[in-house]
Image (cartoon, rainbow, N blue to C red; front, side, top):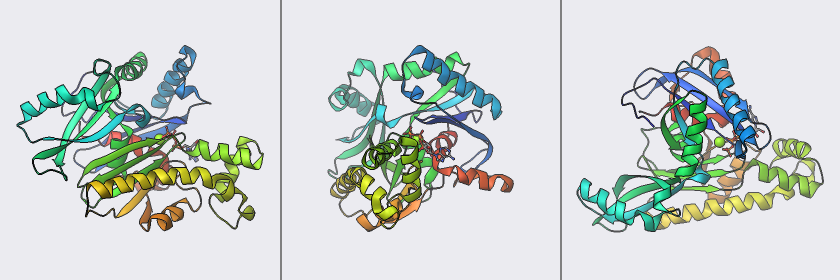
Length: 346
Ligand SMILES: Nc1ncnc2c1ncn2[C@@H]1O[C@H](COP(=O)(O)OP(=O)(O)OP(=O)(O)O)[C@@H](O)[C@H]1O
Ligand SMILES: [Mg+2]
């Protein structure tokens, strides 16, 4: 991997479960202009498959999309799906930078779930520890080498030059929050297979978790309980969501158990944050992802946690030509990760 400092010549690539998305911006500074963007669906489960044919199909889908939307560079910043990334926040004694690096290097094995020799580890000091004045807070993340290498190999095969990998959780937050606001908020990306929960405070992520519940789980629950085919279940879920009064509340009853499992995980995250940063109050939840706008889901979250829930706008920090504003807003829910990657200051 080659890190080119100062290049603005790259695009963001989000390889999701259901589709691939690309975004290229131009210009300098925090507010760049949209150049090109687009998405192409992944059929079935090909994005998750390790088979050679599926990997080739994924590569071809990416290549065709890049050509179709006329991405003008081979340099790419690529996502790492949260369910493959381990993220934690640790407290470490306040030390000069060089010594801190050594201490973390020696201790890191005890914090990450995979063997150090087989993992790529990244860390950054994000502030003072809220628990101990002698310590600093360090955001630590690790990814299995194996996963990175496979992704790198695939992208090099289609002639791309990977300049950065970034976890979904970080890219996402860059897109849907403003760098100017420091008030703590939660960002929820309710995706196809996974929901990412991120809590950001004073400009840095303080908690990041991936929950294996998303649109597919809601649809499976609806299909099983209502005894209908998945395609029909999907229509029901998106049409009626959590409304009690539609279809005699049948869809609500079918999916509420699954929704509440997810809500329970959100609650745990809120409690963890409140306990660690006592006195700092979460101001709002920003939701994005394909399933985030399920009818009445935002309302359900708002009532449950007595907190403002907003629909995130993936393009909030991007200047979009007026003629394209409607079309980009229509897909905003699906683009937070790709836009966030394209917004990186490399
Ligand atoms: N205009 C649209 N574009 C793309 N997907 C859409 C659109 N409208 C509805 N959907 C639904 O949203 C789902 C995709 O949601 P999302 O973009 O959050 O998934 P993903 O990023 O691929 O998943 P994950 O983040 O779990 O990898 C699709 O399965 C599709 O059914
Ligand atoms: Mg996604």
